Image 1 (cartoon, rainbow, N blue to C red):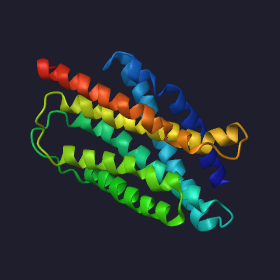
Image 2: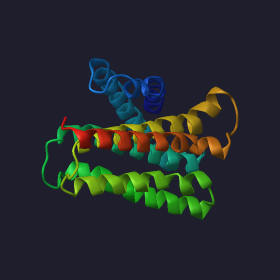
Image 3: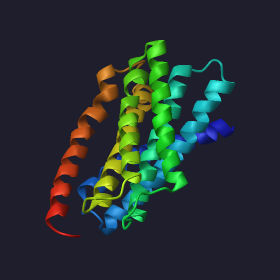
Image 4: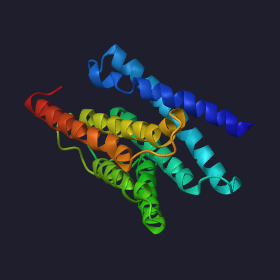
Length: 225
């Protein structure tokens, strides 16, 4: 009964996040719509992450008939979602900082993502599954970037703005990837999808992240906002 409630909450929140994640990207940054939809997306991803962790661990430890491989990926994608969404919000709350950041919760999220990425990748190579072997490279890079940002004194104008974009766009990678891996096959009643589709969100969104970072980096370097 409890598992079913988590599953329903996961589906509803997941589809909501999938449908609205693009809105804050295209509307005016910092505007009313951006903030409101952004918070709806963030809360939706919080529900997705919590429910995914519960369902993943339940299947791993209490449901021997379940697919252990995809259950571990479900847990990992939950960690990636939580860590990136948390980071995207927290950089805004500490945008005025002038010194290295040592808040335990923020570092814990990043270290958890770093550690889980390494462990899941090793597990993926051990069982010879490309999704688990290579996808965690995203988490390794993201976690390394987060720790580098937190542990150093800010040196660029608008650093918080750029890091917020990076965090939320990285979260959108997990949103879309989770749908392709788990949602689409069930919705379309197909047994599997191409490995290329698994990595398509990363391939498509990474250049967007780079583009935004370069654009706003130059913009903030020209004037103080």
